[in-house]
Amino acid sequence: MTSQAIPLTAFDLALAAFLLVINGGLSLWLGLGITRSLVIAAVRMTVQLLLVGLVLKALFAQQSPWLTLGVVGIMVGFAGYEIMNRQDRKLTGWWSYGIGVSTMTFAAISVTCLALTTQLKPDPWWDARYAVPILGMILGNAMTGISLGLNTLFNTVVRERWAVEAQIALGFPRQVALRPFIRRALKTALMPTINSMAATGVVSLPGMMTG
Image (cartoon, rainbow, N blue to C red; front, side, top):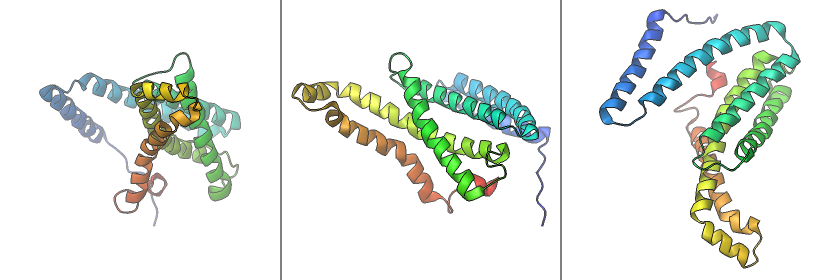
């Protein structure tokens, strides 16, 4: 049995775009106020997919570790920017961006390297055909969890700032004062992953099984 890619025609793409038009129309009708965001997201998605197709074609042909590392850096940087933009309350300076990027970089790259070196074992291990798609899937999940966790943490700390300041004034370390909020943020961040794991195999299939 041989597998081959299913070609998509212009009609197929137009049909998918028509579904977005329906969503935009519903947004206008219901007064949701997301029509502009929907249009921008659709245009960005189209342009980004076209560009990434060209980049990946060149990247797979070159098989350069430095080019692969460069693409990884761009992916991580863009994901960190998206995390920062999703926060209702941002820290001053580069803290909002730095916390999201550092957390996501450590988690995503560690898991990707573990999968490449111990499970898939491509030759070379940094082969872009494997590294980039796997990192993309992990970054997508990590980005959602981290953005939810940070948003929950910042909002709850601001809302309960008097309780935090009172505990610190009484001599409690700040780690102790912030511990309940950190626990709540971690639970919120992990919940999408836990729900996805619970439904895997029945409701959804892992990306690597469908690619």
